[in-house]
Length: 187
Image 1 (cartoon, helix red, strand yellow):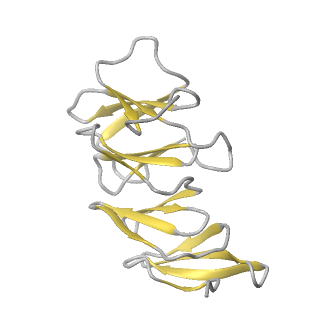
Image 2 (tube, rainbow, N blue to C red):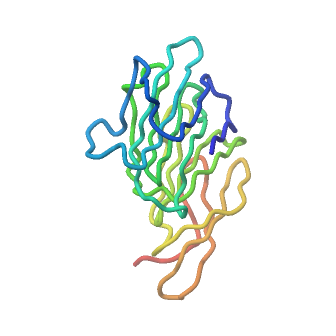
C-alpha cells in the first residue's frame, strides 16, 4: 500500500523482497535489530534531486489486523513506512535520520489533509505528526481498542472501549492540541 495523500518530495517502490543487487545506500530500521530480514518491508526510495536508497523496515507483527505500507507526510521530505504495525518516520534527504514511533503496534494511519496531520492510532491513544514532526499524543482513550471516525479541519471523532460499561463510547479530539472530551473514564 502506498498512500500519497500529502505532496511528497520522493518516489517509492515497495519490493516483494530484497533485491539481488543492493543499491549503494542501504538503511535498516531500526538501526539495531535481530532478524530484520524475516517479513521486512523493503522499499526503494528516490528522493527528489538525491540518490536512491533501499529502506529495510523491520516487521512488527505478521497480521493483516495492523497496517503495512508507505505514507507521505505533511513534511514533503519525510516518508512514513509501516511494517506490521511498526512505524518509521524517515528523512529522505538524510535516511540515517529516522524516528520509530513508540506505538507497537500502530493500528491505523490516517492522513488528515485539511488539518495538515498524519494521525496514528494505537490500542489506547493517538499520536499526530505535522510538518515540524510530532505535535501531540492524546491521553488514554480506550481500555482496549480505538476506532476512528469522521474528521473536520479542527476535530476528529472516534470511539474507545469502556470496560465498565462494556461498550464503545464516543470521544472527540481537538486536532490543534490533542486534548479530548468524551470517551471512557479511567479513574
